[in-house]
Image 1 (tube, protein in one colour):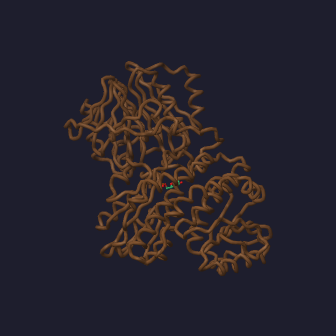
Image 2 (cartoon, protein in one colour):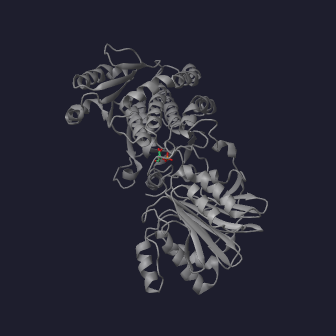
Image 3 (cartoon, protein in one colour):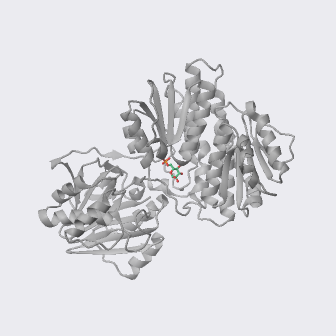
Length: 587
Ligand code: G6P
């Protein structure tokens, strides 16, 4: 979603801001802008659409070379994507960019209008800007003005703020991440480290309520007017982590990384798997693909560890009236660790006294820091909006956790160590058959509707296969529990309609095969992904049979590649599908 970058130092600020904004493109946005400060003047340039439009405008308007500036990519929430609504916003002496949502913007706006403030945009951000400006006019002190303003704001925010009278950037946040990169006397403000990796890998994390003042002498952080010594964190990521490595898209590059990442992840965690066998009830909560990874975990835990698992999307869970019996474990899953609904679900679980385990990629994220225990999947930066490698590693983490739980409870007597050794190679072999999946893509890319069917764990895999296909190719697609088809949806099956069927669970194999026969009888063109041949004449991809915990890992890459190839043939913007954001930091 929205991204923030800011710079104070000796470089030309517009260059640093543009680099940062290009690095933040992956988060999803629909407009962008920068503000650069020179002496007593602040120049604001905004543009709708791609960062390249903004870059052209900056060149055309011969924007000044200055050493201080802030920039923003906006993913519209309040008001359509246009230049007026794009950030930065200016009210009086204050210029500001914002990530998050100000929930009481309407009430504050009415109050400020009564006090004479005039608004140009439809955004909640302009209201925050006006509020700071309002207090600045009274107090003539930026830190005071910011402190008074944030006391009145409800919702989430990360702000980078300029004042036309000062050669400084102020920054503060609540429930939206913000870091400050440091390199000698240069400072870089960013909503995520990817924005500034070209310049530094060292940064501090700003905590809620802290105010950072950044100028050419460096950085001061205060809370309630008291100076705070901040720890400098160093990331092992580098600017090359953002490269496509010769691939045409990040999505395909990230799928290709899966075998190596799985190998590393197993190696790092096999002797240190969280033991959840002591819990008598488990809730798994997440959004999007992470939720569908969670559903795989649900079926594995229920079947092999004999524990009840509620698996729900975080946006529902956070408002639900679910009960928390004693010994309830809540597993939250999130690549970014910053998904607003998942954070809210985690906080609810903690408030209710549940123990929380996070399966998370970004180690410095809110979810990683607020959960009781963490399983880091170590996928590295994932740039394509539609997750692939992080989802695979989430599934692998859940496989390890479910296996360990069943083993601790002595409910299974087989070992998966040998399979773990084999998995990276098996996944690579599957990915290497990319040409086969391209052929399937050629058959389906002009279709309007596609179904995915499967039962239990195979249904969970279908949900992700269908999501991946629809998000990158824009083909309407549904995943169905195979047995539910007859209760309505089968009426949509027409001649030639593609139906993908996943059949890996032997216990329900025959049942799903019958469902495939039913759709075939109505003219569907079925594609079966299974662990052994069937008697059916449909196109069939047979994957090696492996232990049930790891089996989904041999099916998922096929679905990811079919989605990729299909979107490719349709000429879609694969890494940045329309309307989607990588990290959904608002509710
Ligand atoms: C967005 C992304 C998805 C992701 C979901 C959850 O919708 O486009 O790919 O699965 O958010 O994100 P998280 O960072 O919490 O895993």
